[in-house]
Image (tube, rainbow, N blue to C red; front, side):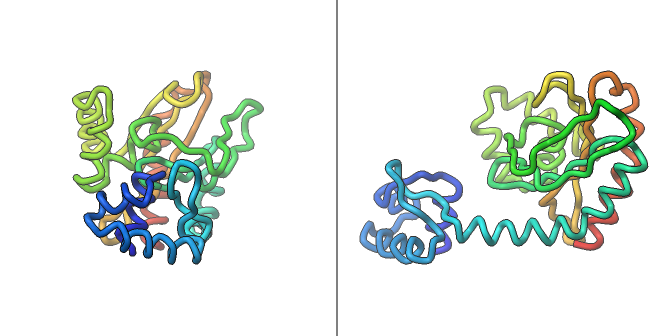
Length: 223
């Protein structure tokens, strides 16, 4: 059943027949498992096939809540110290999702991200800082669908070596960002911490790397 749920999460929407082939199980078995998952709202059936249901989203939201509870006071402190917007991204399948932010109050012009907005892992400082510290399996999936795998691979290697990523104009024109991975005690990286600034203040972006790394370590130790 978990294999079926993972298939829907990663490849959906899928029909029962497609799920049976993907999971290498009998179609009748696949349909029975999908019916059980649907009854419990873990998947839902639409015109294009089965997709993730609200029960999974509710569980994911609860996980994000735990991370936000730990990270928020640290983010607020960092936003006060730097005067810039601090964002927290989590990895969801092959995307980086904004799960929280702390707005800097020092400048009239500032950058804001909408919690819940998402983008691919191979875009934006937060995406790169997440992608560079994922398993070889996840990296391989991103490379498989990339239009320029060599460039993506090189960018991953640079981010791993540097321990941070800096980007500009990849998600929003005129926005520059720097982000670092949040590494847990077991080495996993499920979230990243970043700072976003308008292009007019981009010259100071590299100065935020060390404060970000300090805050990231603090969050990682508490996860």
